[in-house]
Each structure stands twice: as C-alpha cells, then as structure tokens.
Image (cartoon, rainbow, N blue to C red):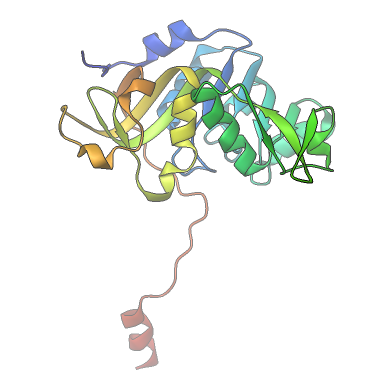
Length: 240
C-alpha cells in the first residue's frame, strides 16, 4: 500500500494536539522539513516539546514555531543561530534541556530501537548529569540517559519510494535518520518520490518500516551560511 499523500496538511493536522513531543530533523536549515513545520505552525497547536539539534534561525525552520509562541520546551544541542531562542532561554520563558549532540542522536536512536536507556561517559561531572543516575564500569563513571520516543517525527529526505524507504542527500542526512526512527508516527517530505524498486536496496538510509506518511517537498531550500569564493577564471581576468 502506498504511503504517499498528495495533501499532507489535513492528515498531519489531525494528529497534532497541544502538549505533544515533536522530533524534527535537520541541522540549522540543512535538511529541515520546511513544509511540515509550516503545517504545524498553521495548525496553531501550543505547548509543544521540540526535540531537535537546534531551532534553525529567526524567521525560518523551527524559528517559525518559536515566533508563534507554540513551543514550551526544547531538547537541543545548540542555540547560537537563533536570537529569539537565546532571548527566551535567558529570560526563562523557554524550558531548555541541553543535550550533548552525540547523546541527543543516540537517545533518539535508542528510542526508535526499543531501548529505554543507556549509559554514556559524556556529560559526567557537568550540569548535564545533574539528577541522573550514574554507575561505574571498569573504573569509569557513566551517566544514564533515557531514550527519546516522540509523538510525531518530521523528516526531510531527498528521495522516497511509495513504501517509505528513504535516501538523504549528503549532509542533509544529519539527524533525519534517527528522528525518523523515534517517532510514534513519522511524516516525511521528499524532494523526489519513486515507485517501489526505484531505490537500490543497498542505498536505503531509512527503511520504510519507520515511515507512516510521505508527501512531496515543495518549499525551496534555504542556505543558512552562504560562502563563496572568486572563480579562478574571474581572478585571472582581473589580473590581466
């Protein structure tokens, strides 16, 4: 049965409710599910807990939900590129749980794998470990971290087939695979949608078993930090 839905907005909106936990793929603006985020914004749901590496930038990505006062808590690794995020964190308006980047990825992977918790040395002796159980293994102290299971996961892929098998493009893969794993219901926007068999099985990054709904991505890709350098031929012509 095909998992492709032409108009995803009513399907996602029906699943949304106040106070939900949403895991969202992307790193900055790279690989973010822009169309799906806009559906969440337009739905008007409030008091969301967002699990994501960061909240994008002001006015784009998850920054849209922040500006719309829809987020109550964030589990993230980094806040530096979003001024509103920093302001709300410093003022105490936003409940922020900082999670080391590798730990965040592993918590989502664990949640998607049915692993309730795991031990890691990362964060031991810092505020990250405060209030969490610890244990010693082979003479080293480790902190217990809980796996993350989100009510809904939002993912951006480069290519999806009709059964939900996914391929990501280069660095846009980032957190998307583990986000796709940890959602009770996973929504995917894909730049390209192909028939079953259109993806080499050895090329699949996320198996379709983790994916529930797929739609075509329509929003243009934003570049967070555009860095360019002169073309060699242009430099040579100036010297001449």
